[in-house]
Length: 329
Image 1 (spheres, rainbow, N blue to C red):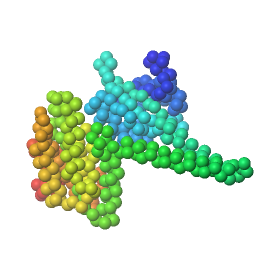
Image 2 (cartoon, rainbow, N blue to C red):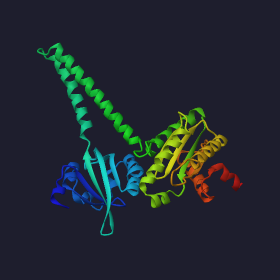
Image 3 (cartoon, helix red, strand yellow):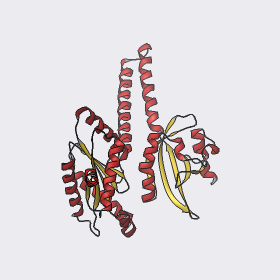
Image 4 (cartoon, one colour):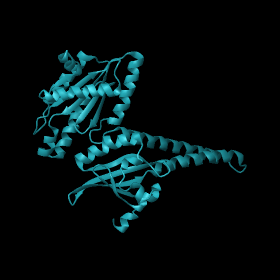
């Protein structure tokens, strides 16, 4: 590593495709309180919480594999004391002497913390002002105004961070993390109100051929336009998200088996009959409808099994898990 890079004003880590740390600069080690021996030859996920591992898997790896780079990924990493430190994470993949390496730049997110400190400081000033004889009413009003401004700024920053953490950058759809949260909420609603719902897993047929033949720009075009089609076929309470790569997922409240198959077939037909310029795009769809014995894991496994059946039976088709079960009886 070059001397300037070792002491650059930001953290720097090199990892393998599997996530093993191969190099790290002094700046990051100093910020986090680690030594080189603590991190080098260790997996980068060893300094992540479970939630951040999920973000890393659902966003970082798919983007690196698909585009070769990742920009502005918000993550929290554990320092040597176990404290959670916020970072903006950028990565780029390249091949050195036949070996794939991913270089990562980490910029610490201190702004949000600074706003919190400023807010606390402003509140402390108010408390002091009440006890100090030489403070005037004008000074108190000014401090109140500053507090309101800092509170609003903090709310806006939190809103932006939450939206970024829940949104797929390419398509503008919600991401896997948001989908998982909404699925858990839907299951709770089912337990309380017995409100039925169905799950779709939608996979673009032969998407790898699109990227290999027409390039990733065309692949992005397909993903963006498919997201628009899916959104146009949803109701207000429906959830549509990008699950990763060329897979999309949907939660359809108040929808049982028969209706879910009709809606999925209409959706499949709309996609197949859309003008895709130079290429023809179709999708395979797997469906599962929640029942009392299901969990978030089992219903996704059922939908995935149904998707696999759609692919095995020729693709460009819809399969509900009950179709498979009925054939086995």
